[in-house]
Length: 261
Image 1: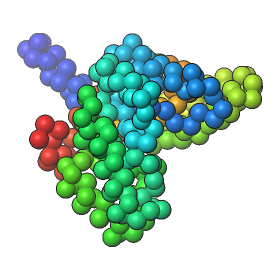
Image 2: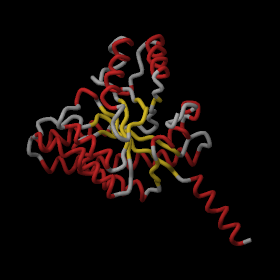
Image 3: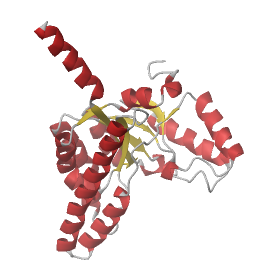
Image 4: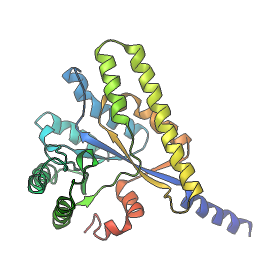
C-alpha cells in the first residue's frame, strides 16, 4: 500500500508540474544597436551553448531576410545542439500594416529558405504577435497557414524582455556598464516575478493552465543572462518542455494535424 501511495503521489506531482516551452524569436539575432559584427554573430552561439549546458531546448523563429552565407552557419549551429527552427516570415512585416496577400507571400519566402533545414518544424509565429487588423485579413492568413499545414505557435507568457534588451544594448554602446548591469538584474527579477504570477494564477484557478509558452528573443541580453534566467525558473519550479508538447496541451484543437503528419 505504501508503494501505491508513493506511486500515485508521483503521478500527481508529474501532472501538476509547471511546464514551460522556451521559444526564441528573430533568429539569427535581433536589435543590436551599434554592436560590432563579431558581437552580433556571437549572440546565437552563446544562447545555443547556454541551452545545451542547461540540458534545455528551444524553438527559434527565423526571419528569412536575415539569412545569408554567414548567418546560415549560426542557424546550423543552433539546430546542431538539438534546437528546432520555425517560420517568422521573410521580412518581419506586421500583419496589421500590410495586406494579406503580401503577408502570405512573405511567409512562403521564409518557408523556401528554412523548410529543408535540419530540425525544421512547421510552426509559424506572427511578427509582433499581430494577427491582422481586420477579420477578413485575419481569416485569410489563417486559411493560408492551414493550406500550407503551418501550425500557429501561440504565446501564453508574453513580456517586455525586448525593451530590457534595447536599454541594455544602448547602455553597453554608451559605455555605461553600471546601468547595463542594473538593467540585467532588473530583467531577471521581472521575469521571475512574471513567471511566479503564472504559477500563482494556475494554482488559484482550475481554468488557468500550468503549461506556458514563453517568448524570448535572440539578443545580447539573453546571450549573457539566459543561463541565470533558466536557473531561476528551475528553482521556482518550472520544467522545460518542447513547443510541440506545449501547443498540444495549450491548444489541443490546434494540433489535430501534428508535427509528424
